[in-house]
Image (cartoon, rainbow, N blue to C red; front, side, top):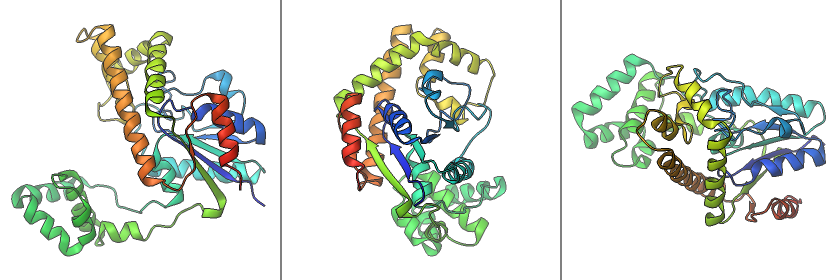
Length: 306
């Protein structure tokens, strides 16, 4: 029997790292990053990347492998992760994928549509048509070729409506058809998923405590170095939690206390969104609701039994 693939997801600061490390030690597994910001080498502390001491406990993959000037997509991550997963299994070990980017897990368990990249000319044409027609008429036109997308995209979501029409113009097939034709690279029998989801108040307290520690441990200097590079603000690394607030403090727009409080609030909001995503998208994955590392591990053992 081939080694099992473990998927350990959940919101930030929930305790995923501790569980993955202990599991890796117990079974001789290897950890693969499934967090979109921990990919980047620029933010070791602010991204809560495992420490050098933690990474010495088991082989780690896809941590800090990208430069902040790069824009990794879900597809780019999957293209990098799949050969690593295959290599780990080929050596008789278990891959342990851990992180809070739910779409990374979904790209493995449900597949990823082969959707054409946005071409500036087509994007401009689709956007101009939306602006000329207005949302109601534009949605009606989209419904002629992609009724599923026209029906599910929320009112006022110009970006997704335009993208759906743009895909049809570029591919000659609807976005919904392309998504329906996807094949999951991992068979259901190959993997086991678990969500670490402590009670909300406990999770929020952990978020606040960890962020305060980051401010003291060098996150401020990391942000300063990254801002000094003059990167495009739209790049993924520039959207890291806490970066905007620390940058505002460094420019004098906020005090240190204001920046910390604002970053803590944004982190709590993000953790809530992550928890909601996992609740909606992985309802059949077992949940770990304990709060202490030891209790979480005991609950993991109980939930992970066949």
